[in-house]
Image (cartoon, rainbow, N blue to C red; front, side, top):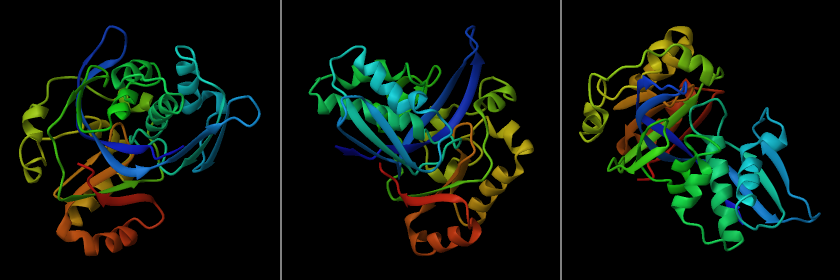
Length: 278
């Protein structure tokens, strides 16, 4: 079984309040994009479950990898046999794109199918939240409004059909701890659900990622990517999640020139460009 766990971007991200448990309530829209890892799951040759990782370097012991964690959590609630899993990393880490969470969620879905468990998406999402707050989103893998810590999901009508999405990951990264240390929770100037219901051309200045306020001053290279996206003709650009990847939304009419422009302006940086999935 071969699966292609895909990344996501955040369309807006408002940090509303700090919770008693130390986490933060937020409001965002998760939107799937076509930048994918590759995950293969096959019956174990040795009788033990293994995980082999290739591609982009992952600074994580095998047993702590979220794919292995997904296997362990599922095996605790359902009867599944040993497997060999091969993960080829393409999505960069430390980017705010949810690559690790996507890998884990797709592992859950793949194992569910492989062993004929018949678990519903809702049940898989209950398991996935124990892996990461954005993990349940990848079980559904369609545009979703997210509340709470990102785990309360409702379907979103946001569609970027007819647009191209370009994503660039600068060399530097932002830790989750650093990102949250600089935020100042509060109600946004514009309600996210209302703002994203309007034309994409009207999002600039209204659809805001609150993390940018603290991260951009200390990481000007990330801010520069956003500025370049607009200079290249993006109708909207934003950092995704807590960074450090930045995406730009472009009209499909820019397709012929966009790839060459990205290669020139962001030479050597991890990047991807493709049509919106929805």
